Length: 598
Image (cartoon, rainbow, N blue to C red; front, side):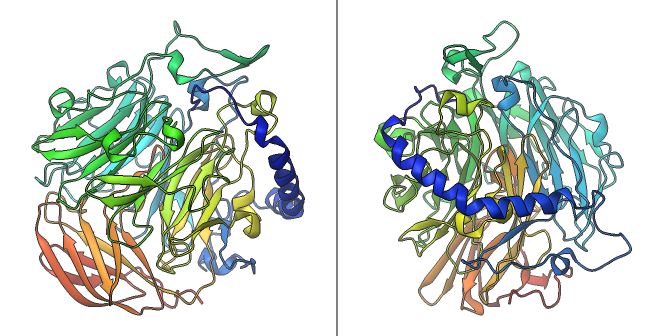
């Protein structure tokens, strides 16, 4: 959303125009060829009588960098398109929508949730590369609202993942009735179907007390309605949405899970009301390894929050002292997207944050002792991200070399962006920054071409291995187009492992569990925390690329209840099911045979 800063960039204009012109020439032929192929694709996808998995039917391209993602949404049976919004777009239309990977029926395959209006859409993963629209069958067509985002978690501990939907003056908690239907239990759970008149954005389930119950954090944006300003003129005579500071802020909330199917609003007592408002994204992480989950909240043009968990459902905002409250030149970031991962492999989780146009994205390296340093400039991220406007943010080891890569979905909030700034565009390509062993990040999309280079109005983004082949895929919202199901077809001989953690009841999906893994002196760090990116939720399983290593020497798991469990000699190239207190209890029976990338 708009940052409220005056549009800048004139001093960069000559260089950027030359760079953009070169990129357009290089990408033009690829884009036109891809466009022609998409125009002639069959709307209904593959013949249902053909059982061959989708990844064998999609031709693999020999990209210069070896990394490749191919959009297979249409071929896989996902035919929905988000409609065109009215012009000029106000903030409420430009705000965007989220998406999710989730296994709602516990069959081992990641299903897909698309946030849309008036109701969301749910696609069941058939396990053969095809998805079936089960929206009506699961009762989701009856849950109406002006929806924005989604969060996924088993709030009642029955072993089935539930869904929370956020929206404009709307909130819905949907109980998963053993994969038969979703039931609206918002009122029964003590929540407000109108979201108490708030503009809900991102949300997340997490065990914040170590009591096994999933508590709830909801971010809220601004106060907006028919009596507030609808349009602004950032350039004379050109109408667009308004900067967020033209509105009063809405404030975030924390809801404690009481364990009886109900939630209690503890926002005042927990300390979250002592924040800035304008909330857009929440992302959880145990930043200091004390066993308690902390969380970052990115705000629109206001300093970010880093809520340190003090225990007993009390949080201290260490935004400024930690170093994540501001971006470059001590300016508040318009932080739409955020995600955690250990990009430098030192055992501590680091933070990636997207930003508004004319603000560089941030890569906050965790220095320990609750201190962070923005390394975006030294890593080569600041320059390439100066003009794009970023929303979805995900860390994914795309080639399983052991180093998490940074992926951003971009798209402007002004449909007439080029009229306001000749160097800006409404539709923008995604970015995939390959992690060169924590020394440098290089955007591979210009070399890759193809579907990731196609300009979109990027918003929510989720990651997940939908075909269980050990290569993590992406789900991306194109606000005025079709969703992108980006199938990871990267050619690599690297090894991998996916950890499917099963906690003790009621936290059966082990939200908040922390994992450290070793091969010799090499360390990997991960956590079970699906809520991040922007308005979205990802595959909760922990995925590590192992590079040349064929197995892990040892794993240490800190479960959300504080229990420590140590395992040794875990083979790679598998989805390992680990039960709290019992170790590895099996290997996912749905894992495809012979799917190790070659």
